[in-house]
Length: 379
Image (cartoon, rainbow, N blue to C red; front, side, top):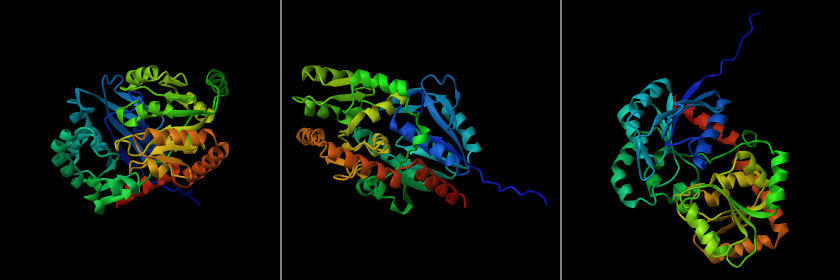
């Protein structure tokens, strides 16, 4: 009797975003990586299209997907443009069954409308345009034309759907898929690195990790730390780094250490050595906070802010951590003091954070949801 094999249908997905590893190292890059990793097991073949200032090499064979990079020509308000991308993008569109964009990136709107408007496509809508208000007005007609052509718009939390004026206009095509991550896709704890960091920085410190941008609210965190002796480690680099270091020096914050950019191995060790993850973002540009999911995955309680975005969806106030008003230095100080003086609270909230992670924020759950959506669109 002949042996029969079950053929798993292959769906080819082209992921499109303005930047990716190794050029940059941020939460959205990790989101794309996690989507690729966790949809592969669901019969999905992934490819990533992005821009790079050098595009050397032009192709990177990463574990999660093959990354194709077009050389960036110029940048306006953090929005990269590329003359070479038009022809190169067209070739990838022909390969793909579905295009999966990440927004906002106005240049990708152009790419879709000029080259790929007949191809099935979805977007994960990560954030409204917050800071560049004039640009947002100019961009609005293009954005509305682009969003109107897509098959689905994915939001990462119900909070963001309710609070975004853009998403409210497209309720008939919105699907909510929370960002998830899997522990196995991160490095195992390296005992040598763990001991090395423990010897250098101790344990039981407050911890922040992320790109040091204006909307991360770190200036308010430094103000909240004035007059305290709570050890605070800040990992990451970015445009606000020098200004924050000057502020810490001016406030005489000897308990604050700036680590700069760290490796994934160091990051996982520092999560384990920390006691509380602080995420003081102050603008709606912080639409979710992958750092918070990483904290929950590592059973660490969180202090975050209420932005009516995913930050207070991941961190449930009073259960997995404490949620404070953005830019409220006094509330931030009080939350840190409460955590500092209550080991029992830290243990209880850390456990609850991990349980919430298992229920809502695993990469497997996210991957299954996206794979289901892809296959539904192709029916």
